[in-house]
Image (cartoon, rainbow, N blue to C red; front, side, top):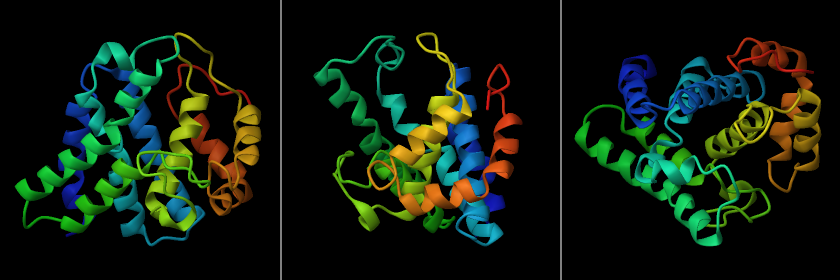
Length: 213
């Protein structure tokens, strides 16, 4: 099934998951936009696959609906027990999307499967120190590697009540330092090769202020 036919369903899932949380709503939309960009300009995916990647990215945090809002909004550091609890959102998201796939049987099962992969694995790290399964390198599905990268980029660029947004220079430095540790170095290298176009896309997003270079 063409991704465009599934767009309203995935947008509705994201809307319900982020209802009442404007910052979270804008975050998942930016992550989807950045994932589409990497699919097109770094990986050379066909347009249809870029759209599928963007839709999967749009619902990457759907599992957070199972986590108490006061825990997600906590301004200070989480305790080890709280951190472990929050990390379960990856598994909750996979399970929710698997259930929705059964409810929408006959629609685009492949897209739901892609979204499940992204939800479950978007916090895995290249060096195997991520969660929930500690996958490393190419064990991590490429879509999850993309969403992990752009999720971190957006989180660093975004101002929060407890921190200012970082400049692009600071974010870029963190990406370079995280190559082959946190991130797939091929994706970082490819993104920096098209840096001007990506920066133009970043400046077009809603961050409440112009992102300093």
